[in-house]
Image 1 (spheres, helix red, strand yellow):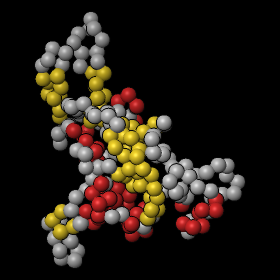
Image 2 (tube, helix red, strand yellow):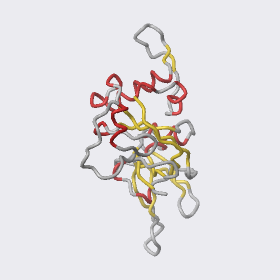
Image 3 (cartoon, one colour):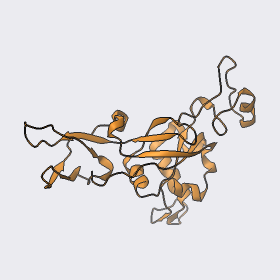
Image 4 (spheres, one colour):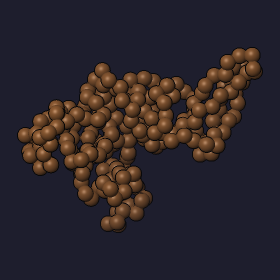
Length: 217
């Protein structure tokens, strides 16, 4: 079993914590894909993709692991310390943007059992989160590749989104399916580099929580 980091935005972290998100789609880089966990050069043509270079050694591997591996979540955070005096060590604590209020505020229980209201003024981007600060670990239970637009309504919900109403659908209908909500979310995150309309190949990573995050920040 191997562990790898993976980045999630605050809304997606909340969806994982709520149990609504059990899949993530990530762009396949360089036009190379694998079926299950790996394939050789002769399989690339079946996908209509650029062939795996003949000079390369070994199969193509999914950068997010294989079933049985684990992913630890990197998210926007802030490290802080609340001391009880110079005569004792100061605990290192972490605040998580996804579960703080809109102003970055949160409640913290100090060593005397007192509830303190704290506020984060500077956040650290998710990419810089160290392993020890991660509060969510995920078990990988499935890996596959598919075209982005092949997502089903059920899988769109597994991405943590829901059908909604009142968003002014271009056709005049005020409701959006979960697939349409996911399409809009995808374009906001990825922009023109891998827009929904380009229908890129994506890794589909299915996961389940391996740990139960503690309550609090």
